Image (cartoon, rainbow, N blue to C red; front, side, top):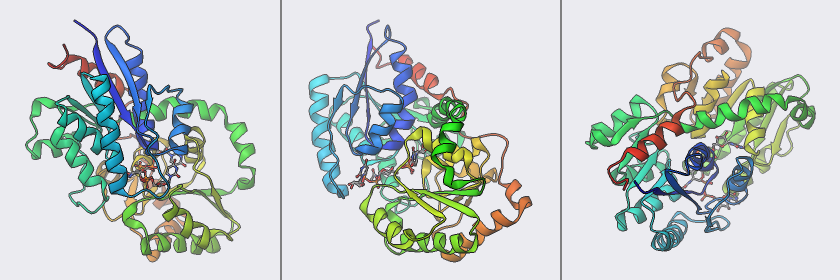
Length: 376
Ligand code: UD1
Ligand code: UDP
């Protein structure tokens, strides 16, 4: 049998973190696979932080990011650039992860060229096309096109089956985010002294870690998120609030305007993944609208308050680790306060087992790729 020529395409921070274990697994099997790593460069600095940490060498980098890019402009550039790459390299399959513009565009160009698509993290759904926006639409497009759906959980697999996707193409693999986290967390615990020195200003105070970047929250939602944090920082002067601020200008603006002068709010640059893993581990509570962070935090037994009205990751919510608080000031302030004030409430949010994976997802995904009929 000849080698499977697989092109792995990604472009943003979370895709890179979740694809890194798949890249490593593919590269560890050179007798069976020819691996081509293609970056769209939808993100720039935030992508490079991850490729540096996991030592991923890109074969192709389209460097597509432009400041404050529009969805349509980015989509158009991705489709054009990726189509040329597929024309040139003619892979046997394309592998893409998640729900970003990069994934949606990779799916479309693979479809136009009749190249099988492997979807990593398949089947997540909120059922609401506007939340997360535009990601719910992106992942549905990819779900229509994929030839192999690697669903992280039974629930995500069931979502696909309910959409009448061919059951033979749907497999539960676990989420590669846990492969990456388990690899990183021991290393960063070993680097504890270095990180404690860097974050000496936290002293031994409790810390709330914050991230936020969802497009559907821009405007009033984001202002309210920042106002909630401001009120919390006044109410709890001996709690430190660490906020690595996403580089999107729609995020940077309100965050710095509203929180810039709060002495116990630490606005820092997007943290390189190892540093962020340490920060999650060091935190008492995580306040976020991120998808990936919802999946990671339960492994570290951290309560997570999610600043969204809905989630495509209901497993950790059902298990008690995650609670949705939306963007209302009253709810965010109320629920963070409850977790800071009430140890019983806090303990309820610490769960024993992460529902998203066991660290072996990438191995299962590559095994499945190599078993497909389209494998020559
Ligand atoms: C994108 C994804 C979102 C994902 C998020 C992860 C889409 C539509 N959105 O949202 O699903 O959750 O990434 O973080 O695919 N920027 C930089 N440097 C960087 C990255 C971003 O300066 O390294 C700035 C640029 O001005 C850029 C803007 O942020 O134009 C927005 O980036 P974009 O990828 O379009 O959207 P995100 O909000 O990052
Ligand atoms: N992350 C990081 N540095 C940060 C914030 C997040 O490395 O400053 C990591 C985090 O551990 C998770 C991923 O980035 O693996 C989540 O990315 P993001 O929240 O940007 O996107 P989403 O998961 O919402 O698509």
